[in-house]
Length: 137
Image 1: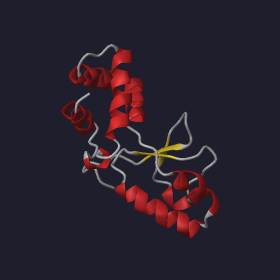
Image 2: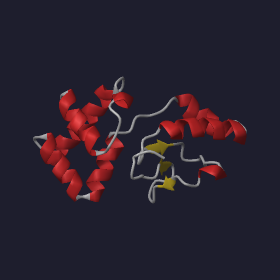
Image 3: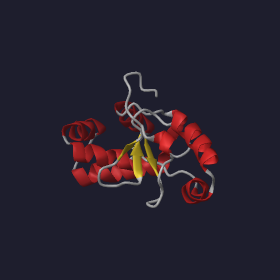
């Protein structure tokens, strides 16, 4: 998958190209494999398929995820006091695109002040930043 095709997918989901600049290789590989699995030969065909099926759209969104640092995932939300957790989460969530995902460890609970994050129905360690009309929250 070339960068122009990858940008088309990012634009479809209103995701920042800049945010994927250093990590795009792995994401592009996962998306290419997903396209191949679905039998799509072009990004246009892939986006049409994604748009028609919510379950396939969710799979595509999962392929667009990029893991955050091991420190954040394993230590911050487990061992630090609530004020430190809230400050770090606030910084991360401000940078997260509208509709973006925060994936935590399965044992992690977000502090009370982050109730605006929508929890995935079938994967309670995945949180979605609410979509906004302007794409910013």
